[in-house]
Image 1 (cartoon, rainbow, N blue to C red):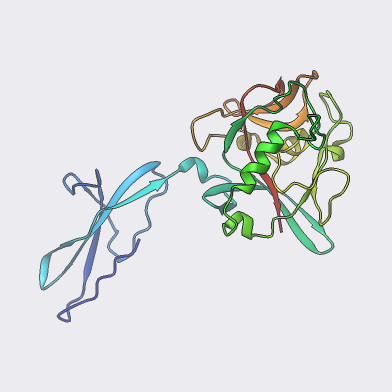
Image 2 (spheres, rainbow, N blue to C red):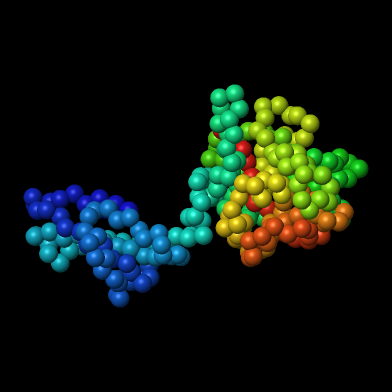
Length: 270
């Protein structure tokens, strides 16, 4: 925050910043030791809303003039592992690959964005397989595509070099990965054998191999809802799909596909 106060009467300006207790009054404010420049960098270790103002004085006006109170909101949960901040959403970079001299980065949102069943039809289907007779796909995939489509075309996510992705599935109902590559997504310029989505759910392989346990627990909702978030890999029965329990920060072997869990969008960016 910077105060713009041109000097008058050839007198040097002095600054003193304060933290107020509310946005309505300076009564009870705390003087910020050492904050005597025209610019203040707010303390980002204090979660929630803080209020700041500055008193500007000089030898001609020693009592000073008090600025308006400014409200600053800090979301501490969005600070760790925030490698990229797009459209007010923090993303963690979890993998990089180089293809023909171009570097692509797999990013996943630090927070969940919406609640949805994985598949309303009641059984697990691979991400790329139609679920219904009309050719529609899993509820989670449709919800993810709708989330992406609703973003502003001129926003930071849509305007970046976000690339279509071959979203590969994993073999049904396995608890260990014998061939992890089958569950990896990959950036692609054309639609290959899988899908060519922009935003998608991570697979078990990707979450297990590229994320830390601390990152598993990053799934606080942007609004009220579940902290558990879907993966796209099958669970241990035909009616279940793997998910991450946000509260305990671990991957679970399966939740019923009709359960309401959240999604954390993953995207490849150039």
